[in-house]
Image (cartoon, rainbow, N blue to C red; front, side):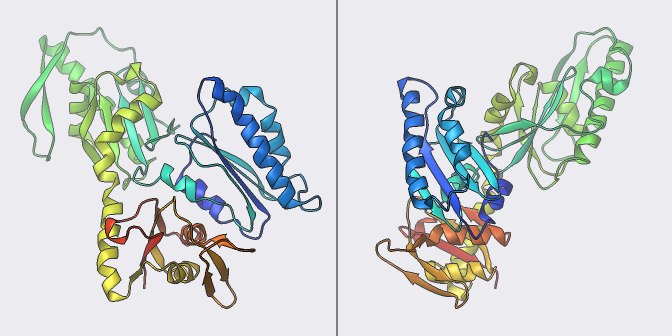
Length: 378
């Protein structure tokens, strides 16, 4: 799969018991370095095979071996690759940023490097709307894919169930502000009845699109509109979507790919996406003084195991080696990695996700240079 989501990361985090093989490496989109990428993976594969041993591999690495020999796979890479294999199956994640080489075999997957793909980026929808094409995209900063929505028309003609009437040249300018905050009335200039009919058609079209959209997407997730001015103006007037972003990706979206539309939409929606992260950081700062937060890794791991972590901030480039005994809930931190040690920051992130907590690959400045900080539910 290209890119990742919180749901996919949560699925990886939920696997426990091992052996879980995690292989991460930087990859390249073009150039001679592409030839080095399968060699790097082969080296990590050899390390994993040695750690698993002859009796422990049991086919876990066979999908990795197939990738090493797949020339076409290496010609279509991004900047980073993460591979995960266990008895539950094999998964691969292509990342839009480089990651350090890593080979780990343990009871859990190493999911910490994946957190950057969803932290601060979040998820949003884009409605790319024109008279001739309707697309609804689910996107993050790095990914975008088109949703298939039952009953969603592909065009005005399909929505209204008849051939589009002969076009009448239309122009649009801003009218007086409508009663709905942040929206303007669309003012058209044209030729009498034909113009009124055209406006009526687009109004009906936009109402149908909005109705189908509201029935298919989560209303708490921000929506960005991509449309030419006058179509966007009409849609905003009729839309009942509660979290539509005020700014619009301007211009005809029909000429843009899904990724291009999402890339233009992301700067517009970023402030809204970061609201949850900022709010969690503010609450953490307050909670720390009332026993509802901590920057101590041992306390965080225990709270995450108990399901008490509401929001966890982690420094993805820092490691806290140690061990955790779920029977006694005892945490041992070590200055250097020893036999049987795991990255306790990764463990805390996995446990938090398994209990539906939020994890951010960032650290509030007041907690730097710590490895983790957590806001507790109770």
